[in-house]
Length: 281
Ligand SMILES: [Zn+2]
Image (cartoon, rainbow, N blue to C red; front, top):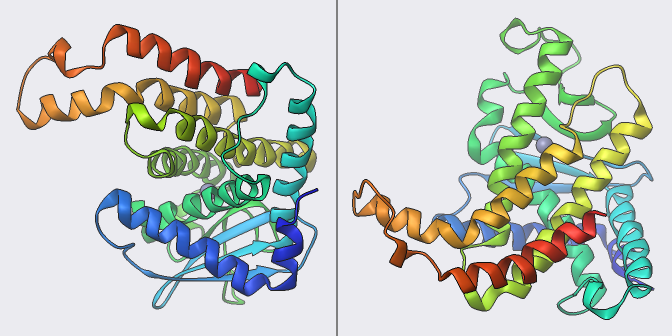
């Protein structure tokens, strides 16, 4: 039904480079400056789901597996099959070909990795990398290079490092969500709903992977926590321009006229937030 994985497999380098390029330009467009490092990406041929980001001398290196894209495509196929059995108003509303939804989910995964770097996570991990899924280098905070095992950053033990990784995940999720959703505009409701659905697909996959691995330590927050942050951001989105404006004007209160009307907020919740939440169930 979908061709994303086929396109990827025919030329993994071109596919990954193109999606990375999109993620980088989205970053620059939203933040207002270019991504602060050069980034390269490699595709690893394996059915396993994992993605790793780690610092290199001249920037950031990403590795993603064909299994990651394969899993995203499989989840989208399943979601669209289920969606087609629902009444029209409850179906997932795509914006374009379903392959675009697969690419957008994949691109959010890359945006997540980029933001680990942009926030500065690697700078205090003593050169170590960060992994989603079980990579050959390990889980969570991973040592990508060097044969000699380095001491853990800041002398943290395995449990502390796994807990730290969970905090980093939530922080990176937040920034990647903000960048992909973009600023509020009443014309963009279908876009917010679509992007949020593309993001939650990746969160579900990472959760399923954690459960499948059944390791003694969790390395990613529960999907419920990550999704709560996503829904929370979606709910707050229409009020953010007003909050920013009041902040810039150094006001100590939020004037009601800066906010969208109550009718607009009610309609936004029923047309954007409610359908995304319905996708969760
Ligand atoms: Zn991560």
